[in-house]
Image: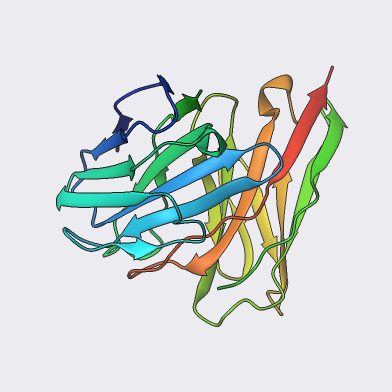
Amino acid sequence: DVKVTQSSRYLVKRTGEKVFLECVQDMDHENMFWYRQDPGLGLRLIYFSYDVKMKEKGDIPEGYSVSREKKERFSLILESASTNQTSMYLCASRDHGTANSPLHFGNGTRLTVT
Amino acid sequence: LAKTTQPISMDSYEGQEVNITCSHNNIATNDYITWYQQFPSQGPRFIIQGYKTKVTNEVASLFIPADRKSSTLSLPRVSLSDTAVYYCLVALNSGNTPLVFGKGTRLSVIA
């Protein structure tokens, strides 16, 4: 089974702090994604990466950056955390070379910015 | 990218069949339709996927009409444990594609 592991389940940070959310997958997947989930808004795509050192903006990239130095790891960075970034963050990966490959999600990091 | 529209919420009693429809009017020729299920405090998980007609697995069935502008997820004889949010995703399912979800349907199963 594919495993997508997010380093923290819960995180509390202060406004203005630099925050790193880490995600690791163990299936050599090329594609990795970061979403945030808020009540009533569903899953919104922040950034995705289709290979090492590659990144593309999703629908809501403002206030975020990402890093993909190794294939298995995709980091989401909040350069200066703000209270409106309090949310559930979900990482996912997918094998782009296999037809119809579904997304595999981690269990999320609930970030609170105070 | 194909935009999807689903009902925000649905209620059902245990033992009933539940059908959740997703509209995707601008689906592209090479797009696939995939459904995910999300329980509280967990990430979404894959349920079923299809391109056209009908697909069935041990969890659900997926009905896709000939024009592919909508799809219906069918859950037979739901139980309390089927209470979850269900997402429909329409996207080219290979290559380097941003995968954009809609807002999902919150299904509540009542005893």
